[in-house]
Image (cartoon, rainbow, N blue to C red; front, side):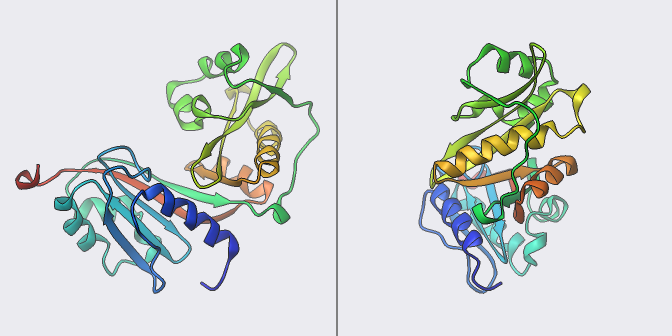
Length: 244
C-alpha cells in the first residue's frame, strides 16, 4: 500500500494492544499469535484487526492458533474480518463486529461548530441521564460509559441532548465515543460534540480513532476528516477439548 504515516501509527497502537511480539506482515495477509492478555478483543476471544493491506490476529490458547491460521491463510485482507467466512471455517460460539476503523490526521481535520459545546466531568449527572434515556444497545454501542476524557455536550434548554468524549488507549490513541438523543438525530449534533472531543484528543497528542458499524456514524466520521483504514472482528471460538 506504500508508506502512509497514519496507517503506520494506527498499526503501532494495535501491536502494543496485542501484548506480545507481533507485526503486520509486509507482504499482506495476517499474522496470528497466542496472546492470553490481548486487548484486541474480550478476554478469551480471538481478535482480528486489519489495517491497510495486512492484519494481525491474537488467540487465547495454542489449540486455537492452528484453526485460526488455516481460516485466515490465503484470504484477501478485506475478507479477513468477514464474519460469515470466519464462522464457516472455525467453530464460533459468538461474534462481535465487524466494525470499521477510521483514523484522523490533524492536517485533515475538519472541525464542526455552530452550537454551544460545554465541557463537563465524565461522571456528571447530566451525562448519566443522557445514557439512561437511550436503549441498552445504544448505551453500549456509543461507549461513553468508558471514557477517560471529559465529556463534551450540547444542551437543549436544561436537557443534555448530545455528548462525546474519548477513551485514552495504550499507545496514544483517543477512542472517540458519541451519543445523540434519539429524537434529535440527523441534525448535526453528533458532529459538533465529536469535533470538540477530537480537538481535545489532538491537543493531547493522541491519535483519534473512530470505530463504527452503523453507516450514519461512519458519515459523521467522514465529515470530520477521518479516513477508514481497516476493520475489526472479535470471535469467541470453541476450544478443542484436548487443549482445555
